[in-house]
Image (cartoon, rainbow, N blue to C red; front, side, top):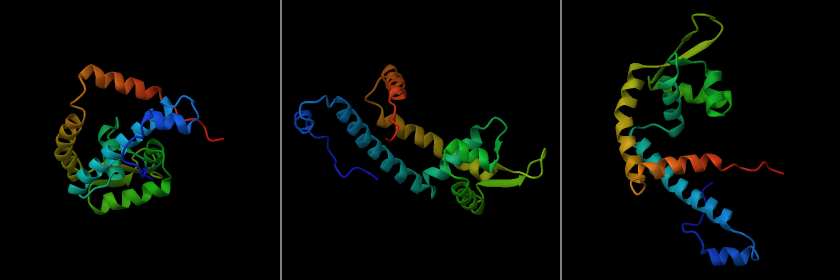
Length: 163
C-alpha cells in the first residue's frame, strides 16, 4: 500500500517525534518509499500503454533472459518469489495473449515448460528501448558513477525480520 504522504516531513519534525533519536534511517526509508512510488506509478502507466502488467512483464523478462530460453512454472514462481497459483494466473493471461507458449518438457514429459513466443519477443523488443529511455530520463540527474554507487548502496539496505 502506498504511503499517503507526498512529501518528506522536515528532519527537525521527525526528530521531535522520535524524541531526539536518530531519524536518518527514517528519512532515508521514507525518501526511498516516495521515490519508489513515483517510479512504480510511472512504470505502471508505461506498461498500460502496452496492455501488460509489471508482473507479466517480469515473466517475459525472465523467459527472455533464461539460459535455455525456457522455464518451468515452478522456476518462474521461485524467481518471482510468488506462489505457483499466482504464476498459473499470469501464465493463463500470457498464453491467452499469445505472448508465451507452453509445451511438455522434452526431457521429462511430466513437466511443462514455458517459452517466450514470437509475439512476446516482439513486444519486448518494442518495449525495452522505450523503457530504457524512460529510466535514463528518470536518472539523468546522476552521473554514471553515481548510478553505480547508488545501486551498490541500495544493496546494503536490509529489511529487519518482523518480531
